[in-house]
Length: 360
Image (cartoon, rainbow, N blue to C red; front, side, top):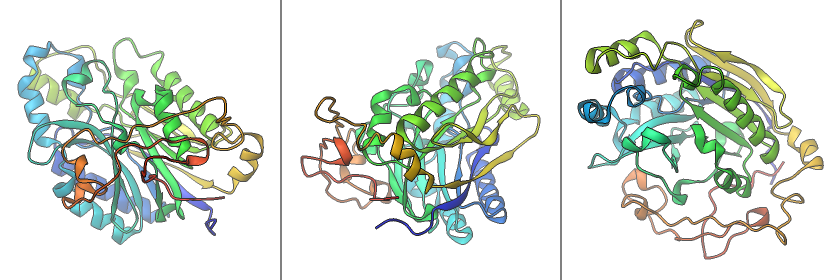
């Protein structure tokens, strides 16, 4: 059944965390949820690893000198099953759904993932997506995610439409994007760090982010919320105090916006940190997809499954994922290991598709 409500105010968070301070940054997350609710925002997208902040120091110092900083980073990373209760309560009390970028620490260990935690407006965690491929020196920090967490979920916060996301250059992975398309995605969260502050990326990063966001908006026929952090002085001071002087990361950066499936900007881009923390807001109308998909429907008449076929391996990679759906709640349940996703989100192998119907 098609959702009866199609218009929602959504926002992308363009903000800096309290760098390397999990508890303080989670408090800031709650404050931003409360602000969003006061501005009638129904869904809020946070930047990549907003808690406890993106580890910019990995780009700046020799690896051998970073071990103490990485150990501290692990301590400040989020254990989903135990660290997010207050955030969940804030979502419930304020009737706001979120996608929260975190550095996730596996419960009972020190393996980390670059993750997006999807939480509905009732406070329920509905998915945890672990970034498939950490980029360049990120491989010193985070393990690889797998297909078991590459999904979309219907959220009550946006009327039952399907929401999913990818982090940073994971948005360059055509197979990952196709996996979301095949699950009938409607809203996409593109989470980023302050890439344009890095040495060598000053003139190219924002153009890359915009190009990738518009590409997925059109090829997937989805609304895209681009959420980026910016580097503030707290981050730079922490690196200087703990690792020494550096010249590779500067203050500012980030590119945040909201994009229509036909690539128009519904919210003008916010860049840098001069304006401080900003909720980049827009109203999206999912009924627009009816007209968009007359022209192109990548999960329908533009899929051409008799010519091009696609498969997604949903085999759980990590011990906690093997507990099944809802593994972050500790109890878990049995789930299928392999899903073949083809035209219209069809599956083989007894798997369970992540998204709901969400027809428009």
